[in-house]
Length: 300
Image (tube, rainbow, N blue to C red):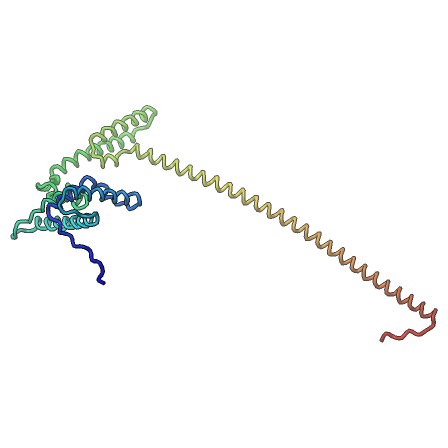
């Protein structure tokens, strides 16, 4: 028996593809979400079931969710290829035919998936023509010179004023005035200089950050010192406990030695008692032999 083959469905027409893109558009954020947890997957299945229902209610050729997913993925790959080919033909050196325009369905899907297909915008390289359809918007040499002079001049004036002020003998009033001047100068620089340069000349902010770093370092050093003191104290206590333990062990060994000496003396005393008893028995036997006057056979 031949295995069951999947029934061949009709091809997607241009109308079906456009309808599929329209049905997918309201749920694009959920469908294109890259998370793969259980909750998100279940939500995608629910969304595709709703898309299938909307598609079948408007189309003459009913489809299942699997077919619609496959068609949508194929449409995305096709749009990427068509857009790359269109860009290549547009930036060609010429001499050939006009670049083939994208299909309406591809244009619609490209507008939906722009962040995935189109490159990032850059106002200062050759890609600016592609995004804006106009000549490169890079600043001219005169503009750069004006920007440079407007940025560097306040910095030079500030540095010269700082050098001149450091040559005079400092007093309390001059220090207060210097601080006020620095604050005012920094405020003026913040309003006139570009943000990138502005970050480089905020001396007070840098000083504060350095002071904060020094405070953090000193607090860390103090904490390490406390930990080291605690560790040395614990080690000293441990050494003292070990010394006391060794002393007790020595005393125990002395007691054991004295006990062994006493046990030895007791054994010697017991041996002497045994010897005395043996002599007494021999004497008693001799007396018994003399009374009864019969020979005692040698034990040998």
